[in-house]
Amino acid sequence: MSASGADRGLRGRTAVAGVGETTYYKRGQSTDPEFVLVVKAILAACEDAGINPREIDGFCSYSNDRNAPARLANALGLEELRYSNMQWGGGGGGAAAVVQNAASAVHAGSANVVVAYRGLAQGQFGRFGQGGRRPAVRGEFAYTLPYGVMSPAQMYAMRTTRLMWEHGIDRSTMRAVALAAYHHAQNNPRAVMYGRPLDAETYDSSRWITEPFRLYDCCLENDGGAAMIVTSAERAADLSDTPVLVLAAQQSGGHRSGAWVHNPTDYATSSFKLGAQHLYEQAGVTPDDVDVVQSYENFTGAVVMSLIEHGLCTYENANEVLTFENLRADGGSIPLNTSGGNLAECYMHGLGMQIEAVRQVRGDSTNQVPNVNVSLSNAGPMVEIASTAIYGTAEVLG
Amino acid sequence: MSSLAEGTYLPEGLTQPAPMRDGMDAPYWEGTHEHELRVQRCADCGTHQWGPDWVCHACQSLNVEWVTVEPTARIYSWQRVHHPVHPALADHGPYIVVLVELPHADNLRMLGNLLGDLMADIVIGSDVEAVFEDHDNGNPPYTLVHWQATRS
Ligand SMILES: [Zn+2]
Image (cartoon, rainbow over all chains, first blue to last red; front, side, top):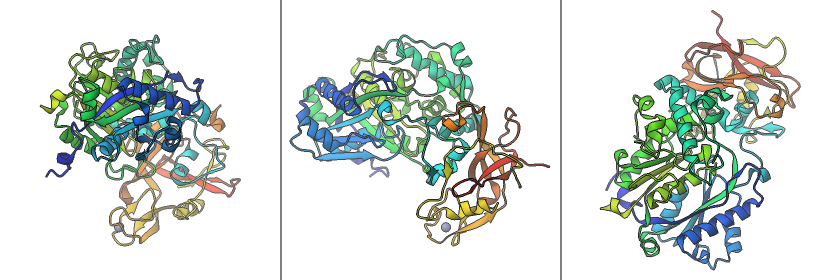
């Protein structure tokens, strides 16, 4: 028996039978309430899967999603609710963890059709980047907010400063991540930045948010809903000739990764160093087998960390390998963020990037990479618990 | 170690800090108000710990004490904030945040503002010392800890 437990693992046991999303809106512009966004996304995913919504018997979400399973089950008229699960942790670190949690529930027989979902309507509930307005702040924020550190960019900038200093990562490498996302969004009509291309000069002259982040290093803020239907591999094979298998899904936190006031033992990390090992062992693939990558951009520097920590390049060669040419779906060696990702498609807290990874296996991405068998999508780099999923075809199982 | 001669680094109006309601980190804030830098140290294994918690992360002992440490450090990382998000900072220019490490306390890290030239080159590894900034009109009054280049 392996130390990581990969031999009892998820490899090929479950599948994503359907994906769905609402229209993606600029922040505050959704005409639908957040709950309605979630319902619409779930119904779209069911239709995509060819599954009656009343077959859903489980729900998984993350980041304290406000739309609770009991309300959703009531609204959808479910006969039975067998499984509900909330992934702890802020930010988008749970976007692949919900796939792990849903797949684990299905594999264990706890439920048969589990929906992983996320809804965001910041116009109704307040923005992420705006900091606190309370009379007194306690806990970890007491040590950061009075010094002007309250937005996500301010909370994570210093990890990127440290990455650049320790490993000589160039600004041009971070720029390539932004250019690839915007390039792909130009082919994706769902993308908020569809029709709004970005060039290197515009990136270079964009305003500082907080050094080392310029405007285009930072994710969008959006309204929308997204959902994925996870079921058994057997059921998925009945629904589709080419089911998208979950090869692995893994949460990842390191030693004291949640330590307050920037005290994780390893600081300039995306939090994936340990989880990536388990992930590949569980999937039975290596980084060389990965055909296409969705790497969560809260900030471009975090993508560089994530790609290195997933073994897709090294600290030494990152500046040479992570170029715009190499990151493009059309001919690049590491096609990256092929929907436009959080920078240019939509900031759906990363669930949209899981959906894009599934579409790449199905062959219906707007920036389709040829012959995808192994598709990786990570979530929430630098947060205390990040996560990654690998999706693939039955061919990978051999 | 010194105090700010006048004014505060960031304008008034930011949310003020307060100890946890269970009292876990109250000694830190009592210390800053007395212009002392206090951190946790395990009475059993001697490990310094930050951020604070009820338990020593090195040996799981609940016998965690507060000790006063020399308020000197070196810069570990930094950012220069150009786009503030709080209304109290709306018309405020850039400000610098540093993450410093305390070599004499197991390299634990603390965060504060870096006093001095706003557009200076900031050198990771350079020596800094604490500056205590009193907010006497807080409710209750409180003291923040900033950093400035060590005067040789
Ligand atoms: Zn101890």
